[in-house]
Image 1 (cartoon, one colour):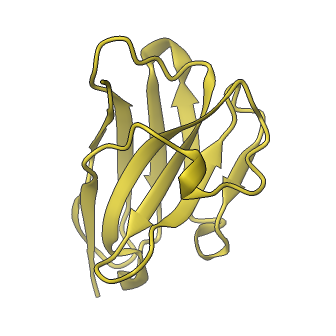
Image 2 (image 1 turned 90 degrees about the vertical axis):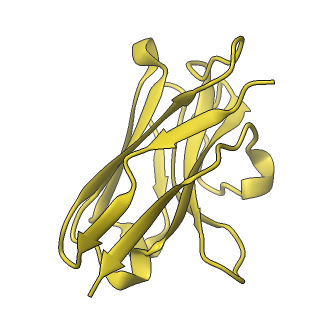
Length: 129
């Protein structure tokens, strides 16, 4: 069964930027016709929805704490979803995951991790203050 694989994590100073990307790793998994999402989780806490994007990139969702700093985008031809993260703070330190959302939908207004599948192993983002 396919899953997503995430890239781009690392350690950055507060105020810095990182660009995450994710793409399917398994055969047969295509994300071009699905909403997609980025999520994050810290030890002992529930997984949090960070940003989501509709299947044709007409609608996006951001959790309040990242609005104006993070940008989600996608390249369906390349089967890749990106998360540009700017002005990072220590509060953004977490494991970041990418996952596949509902089929053929632009409605990402109320995303929940339970509605997403094919989770990757995550990529760790550490922001040093």
